[in-house]
Length: 313
Ligand code: SAM
Image (cartoon, rainbow, N blue to C red):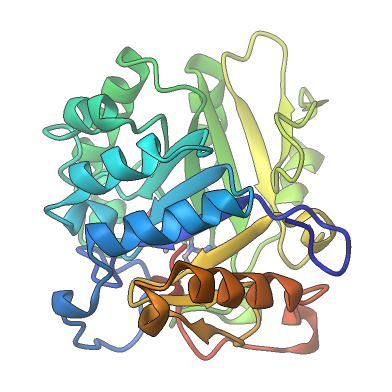
């Protein structure tokens, strides 16, 4: 479906939970109690996705919070991927506990992954978020072995915290079929001060071998680069320095059933009450898409009222 600025909206990101097992400093805020009973159930997700598909949505990303915390994740993936019209079912995860589940999730219909990874140093990684680096690295190996490519790594670049590891990440892209995406910090968590933000494109000043790589698909937010002999590539997602609103093709659905057409605009529509009434559900989704803002307001100092884990990354 097209919005009022002529953008084709064909990509829905569905948050399965706002619970998370890690505490990334740029994403998590105050502890809030979230009740799993408030999260969309598989049958509700099935109904929403079938209406989304009727509106020509083709790609669904499952995110959160941490989607792996849902015990019914395999069932959800299976339902979404079997929905007529949905061509891609993908997931963003921190990969904690993924190795024991990945094969089954792939069999259920999961096509690809974005994996968050902010440090290649085990102790720093644990200090940043409380997780196990080893588990992430084993998950990467397994996803490559299972041919779930292209495999994307999300690294939020934080000045003075992990920006001394850029070279290590670039070496990963040199040696492995990974797209390492350096993400510019957005003000959506406790750590969101301007001086902690670093424009990833600054990397180009120091690493001269990098050349632009053609975008993999229309609306791809990352500008991608690679050097001679690279097996993978690196990408920059620069929500501040070079917003990609003009080609934004997505809407977000929160884990408790609210639809949000722009990450950085607090307007949301609650549609949980419309589940069971596909015509009403469709109308609410269409209204949200029609009202998708032209661009985000980060540069005007806008700070979303919800942190990322509550919206769905
Ligand atoms: N738990 C999963 C994970 O860690 O990948 C999925 C949810 S997480 C919110 C999804 C992505 O959001 C992360 O990869 C991270 O890069 C991004 N993210 C969260 N907060 C952010 C912020 N303040 N600025 C930029 N990116 C952020």
